[in-house]
Image (cartoon, rainbow, N blue to C red):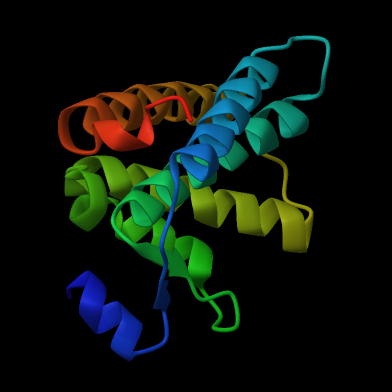
Length: 149
């Protein structure tokens, strides 16, 4: 499915972004990746911070391509993650891992399931990797969003 098709089924909306918006999202993702590595906080909070960074990077990919998720339609986190292949060329084997982390987050948030230490470490590593991918993709494909304004 294309990004335009996702607009047609109300999963995405078109959006005009700016360097300021992208800068805020990247700064937030960097803070969340840093926070996810703080050992003094609970593993669950570390996972949440890393997951939030993943969502912020996915939002950068969408915004830089002229879209935002439709938050009026259920499943916008899933749409954001699965759109990474279309927005920044993230391979399926990577976004599938991110989607599995999304499901773990849902089980924790809505069912109280514990998140095992290996999943916390995986989420932190994936968030760090996606932040690097996002920055590299912007430099190569949309450097105007990295310009100071």
